[in-house]
Length: 451
Ligand SMILES: *Cc1c(COP(=O)(O)O)cnc(C)c1O
Image (cartoon, rainbow, N blue to C red; front, side):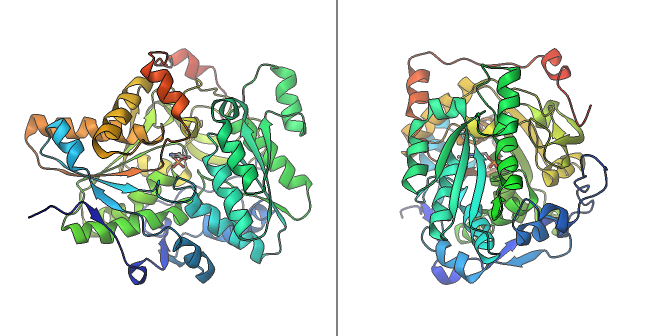
């Protein structure tokens, strides 16, 4: 008998609602605050920057399930369901009794999970009469997804891309331009925030924090323009729940239920996406699944950050968000996993860590590439450097099972492919990459909140 490797859903089996874990959390996330007044922000306050429907979802702590608009479902069908795959060859190479499954979110026109939220954000913006959208992008995955979604729904897109990533991954800018977007390296001279950052530090190679400052400024000063964010915020995690909701049905087809769920962690959207639909059963039905978020050793906000109110951007333009943070002016090393170079964690995840529902683990850069290459050679897919953090964490767990003999079921999210990151793989293979540890002094010198 041949063993089944891929588990798919038919079109009629696709989820028609997203999951909103806020409704089921015993302790709700603390509210975002106005930076000057320190008063909790309402839907109207957020709606100056974001599409209104996204703001409603952001603060929705009552509805566990939210309907996916028909028009968005139609676009999801271009690439969903994504495959759930049993990684038999990886298991064999590790000699582990664990059953390893991965959800392959790299199988779509843009190559990462980001498209799952770009489509609804652009759909809502269009519905509400917006003509332009703007955003920041690190590695370029979010910018690419947003550029595509904007073109699908007939919007103009302006993207600020972190300068270092633009140099490391020039093809992502080409992808964005192919879909019709305008792309600018951040920090740029085209905004007040960008000019201030360059004046203070002319060699600044950019961070997600600088790019967010610039995009938010553009949205606030341009009529008919809304800002969109690819991670961190609650409504993004809601849209990404499509990953876990599908995986839940696919695991059922495989006849298993995960003991451990793992994803890499930048701002928390692909982690929340795969984890929350399963965590729901920990909260409501007494299941005992372990949830692990894999972050880079060089940007350890989950394990070494402080839980506090902090800005989402470097210049301090965004609302104050309650989160595990390394400080909004923390500047992570230029690792290749550009999508994980963010100083803070999402509000939902931060509360869930405080309440003990999940935990973070730090992975050194070289271990992630070693894991990525083993995965490529066994399963035939070259993973994004971000996703390789999840693979490395999975390998650690699978090797523990080898020690104990436990047949654990491990599910991880393959958030994207690495076909535009081959420079990074070349550098690793040539021995030109290194690890970046962060000292306690590095962490202590950064600013949290308004101080
Ligand atoms: C952006 C990105 C991430 C990190 O963002 P999250 O919001 O934490 O998911 C991870 N993997 C890939 C491929 C990405 O593009």
